Amino acid sequence: MQKISIIIRTKNEERWISSCLKSVFEQRYGSFEVIIVDNESTDSTLAKVRQFPVKKVLSCTDYLPGKSLNIGIEEAEGDFIVCLSGHCIPTNDRWLENLYKNFDDPEVAGVYGRQEPLSFTPPGDKRDMMIVFGPERKVQRKDSFFHNANSMIRKEILHKYPFDDKITNIEDRIWAQQVLRHGYAVIYEPDASVYHWHGIHQNGDETRCQNVVRILESLNGYSYEEMQQEQMENLNVVAIIPVKEELDFTGQKILLKQTLRYVARSRYINSSVVSTDSPELARFAVEEGADNALLRGKELSHDYVGLDMVYHDALNRLENDNNIPDILVLLEITYPFRDENLIDGMVKSFVRKGFDTILPARKETNVIWSQEGDRMKLVDEGFVPRKFKKAVYVSYKGLCCVTRPEFVRSEEIFGDNIGVYKVENPFSGMEIRDEWHFDQVKNILSAA
Image 1 (tube, rainbow, N blue to C red):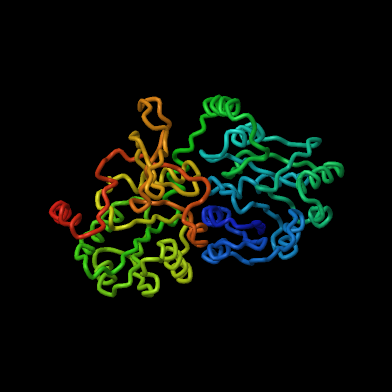
Image 2 (cartoon, rainbow, N blue to C red):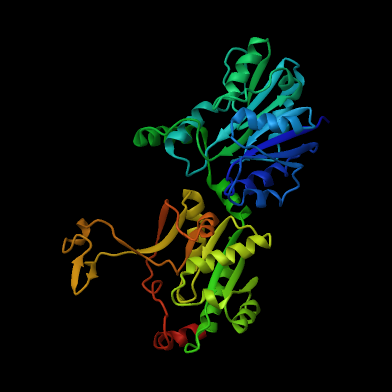
């Protein structure tokens, strides 16, 4: 069995790299090493990489695609070189051997595999991948199309014909053109497939693209539901629950216990962390099932300190302890009436639609005003019949906010691509902020 060197190029791939490496290290082909060539990542990419048995982590500054691959090839010990992007995820455990099986013919210089879209890939990109990466294997002797997001090449060929390390794009097609001119062949192998979150061309006419995608999906029997379900179960989803000690409020333990019950019922949350300034509440949280309780400094409990700083502190301490979340679920104990499927429904929608952040929200059809000094200003369209009004939503961040660590790390919480998860239960938005409100619902919570 010949040794294979898998070179993975990364640049801020924290969303994808764990799924990528997990799938790589599950391959049936046993003789391989993994080399990471990182282009100055500023997120948690390298922290996640360190959780896997990679052979080497190399750095590439002033990134160029051929240059980064050549850096990895120079350190590789394998007889064959695999080029894999850090945001590509092999679809099964035979991906590597399906690339390798094509090299019985000595005239084959390289093999590139299939790329399949995710459910939330833009229609234009999804269409392009479906058209370019079809179901039939191809032996190419004139067609120089080749793609290094997912490929395998003989190392001896790369010594004779290395990648151009000065061009900014298509180093793979230029290389293929060169080896074809010297009498070699390249092969497209559809059985060596990866999921790739973006496409190879720019997205075009949205409506037309959607129609093409719909037809291609029906013809080819694509189903992303099972893949998305597996992806969600492999992600590290961490819930963070902030609790501040309140001397004049006695209901925190009951509210915290209720919140932890919802967390325990979640299918996707891997661990829960309570951030508090109270040693007593920290002990209580662990007794009630929290996986960790972090005692934060009193300086984070002042009224003028926002929860963005509290979440940032908790995430920083988690990552320093080598718990690197893929997704964060932010919950406040002041919302005791969550629907049973709220958290998992939001995580599922978040992953399937590729949001940066998703918030629960209720559609508001009443007239909405804002106060400016002593006057009230109309915010929405006013007294228009409800069925003709534009949708306006009231969101409940504390009820459940699902977001990415990169935004909490920068103390922003929200990304630009925000999704809405509609809630219909009128009790969901009920928030308990003082003793009087707590007294109204205490019996309900105690019986829960």
